[in-house]
Length: 486
Ligand code: GAP
Image (cartoon, rainbow, N blue to C red):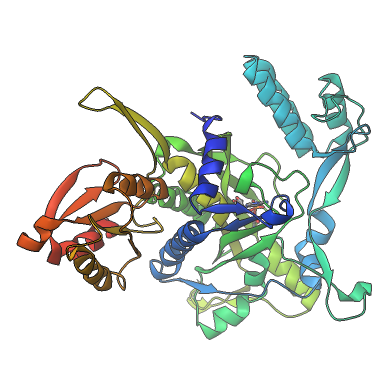
């Protein structure tokens, strides 16, 4: 169950512990743009690396590329983004505040739910989805008017008509501001894969079915950017386009649906917090599409999209570039003879890296309270990030700053730091240091005490259970390595 109260606490925690900061904070911030601090950047990198490995190393028929953010402007004409990458918006005439129509209606349905008017909320969303799928703007406007949906700023229902707004950012390349020089910041990484389809297929001698994976920044001028790093104007995607024979796309679509759901569970997201949501309105390029949704603190929302994109993108790039983007399928035989020059169909998996960071953090964040043996209360905030993704794996903590303990700890740090991310700290009481590591999400702590000097044993403390055990100093590296790989 979503817990909206946790969300502000999680945002504050992310700032306090070096995970995520508002961009340009000293200038009062830039709306819907965020910077990752020392822990956030490492967490993000660990998730990206894990995805990259799962895609490219664990699948023999998937390779990775890194295409540029800037692309030839015709790319976006061909892909349909110039003509159709827009959202229906409505403005309130009194406050001049602009809303995405679906967000305005969804917010109102949340208000109905908060008043226990669940059935009305569901009926409202069903009507909205029907009208959106039919591009019925008049019907949507009537829905807003008849429900007397108000602007959150002016509190009035004085709305404009609904209009479409393109979400792409544009800039100029070169010095002359002519239309011909207008280029776009890519709104998805996918197109960098499509335009390189033949380069990769030929140089990699790839045989269908095969995939091309890529991670990188994407930009969208989201009008209503909200919910922290859930909806940003600059964000990162991890996308994979899987090229298949025409006619086999539904088989592969179902394969990737199952595969991606399993992947999310492999990074510790519980099955009950994930679900599929089929698209009602298909994007201009898709013949089937589903979202994997996660139960965020503010409700069920899209985490990843899986789309059967048909041959739309490659066909359009072939048409606009006038270059053949076809595959000769040697394995496709008719009457024993090879035939088959065709434009492959594509199944895409597309997940937002920032949304995954938010998913991991929302799932990991816990405020705990308990009674100690002496009857007093104790508490902690802990980030139960899976060890394989945690920014720091091991904290090395000499009990005291003297008596030769820091020297032993430093030696251990030197032994371990080339294998995994370690953190050394000798200040403050040990309990306080443990709490700080809990808050950062460090799964393991090693404490070196006076006994270590006698028996070469150290204390291994587990973040999640808070249990402690004595292990041999010489085994620390291998034990921690084993635990991270689990
Ligand atoms: N290439 C297909 C594509 O871009 P999408 O559903 O628009 O499909 C894919 O985006 C994923 O990218 C989403 O599931 C989400 O995780 C992420 N995403 C999209 N817009 C975002 C935004 N404004 N901020 C953060 N993540 C976003």
